[in-house]
Length: 323
Image 1: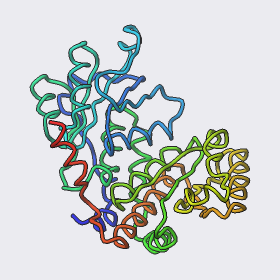
Image 2 (image 1 turned 180 degrees about the vertical axis):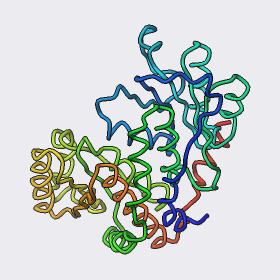
Image 3 (image 1 turned 30 degrees about the horizontal axis):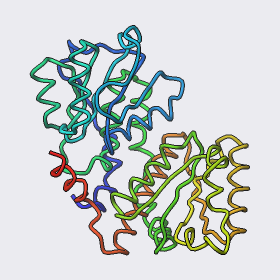
């Protein structure tokens, strides 16, 4: 499936009804640890964002995160790998299983699904539609919500299929890509919306095939912005950056004030800044509207530079070299 079709059809993913296989081995828990890399942890990031009070950790590394033995017994550990063959997620799953802790798996196919079947571990097998992990966020989000046993969250996610209109963001995305031409995007958001900024970065990297970076308020006001206090001698270092401020009128007014002042400081120094407001009703809807805009922007960026927008050949090259 082309990237354009994947974007246009993404709302259909929210009709998916995930089922837990080996359900008799499934042990729900309030405390969750999810291991995933790249696009396979984006759904977990979003859940952590919209449910900040839940004891919910995302680990992107080999093996298990460091908890006390007593605390680990209270957790559900979820190994998430879209392909089912991600080295770090496999390491995590084996480590959790060896410690005889509560484990579940989410994947399309691959070694992780085989491991779950062979060891009678609860798992959710996502639909195999041939799209990239970053484009399968609806499937992943629903599968993860099923494993964390949250019926309210499942209902909210399913509702996105009724309110999202992917094609409505194409024109704005194409225009924004034009604004960003020959620039390196730096995406800024509130700490609350870190996941949105990170998704923008990933889409620019993987779909657009360009460098992109992100940071969050208020932390960046204490360090990063000092690097853009340009002088005649170092202006050339900052000239290629274009700052995207993801604004949120439902967020903390103090963060909005910081964004406004930072934008003024940057524009006073002749740095390029564009505001990208979140739009929609509930936080999930606003999040996915922004990610749709990011999808179209990244696709248009790829078209501007004549790069392939769907595959990630450098990642595949790396995987072959690391074997």
